[in-house]
Image (tube, rainbow, N blue to C red; front, top):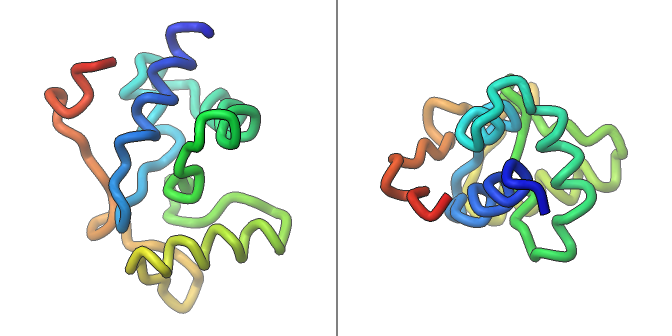
Length: 109
């Protein structure tokens, strides 16, 4: 596994229930500020294998980025079960729900 991929997996694992992170935020923390699309690819290919809480990763607008209606509804439902609220435009308020780990939270990276 590539170092960036390992870091992304480790970061996603520490997102606590009731919080979210954005693709870009994870990419930046993992060392590649322009790697948001790589985070998408990693989530798509490794979530099941590593038991990642994939539903806690959303886009920078606070939206679920999955276009498939069934999977999008599954992600929104999982987030709602963790207490995350969506506004009338199906957006998450990132000022409330964004997880901003301290560097010492991710020193395993």
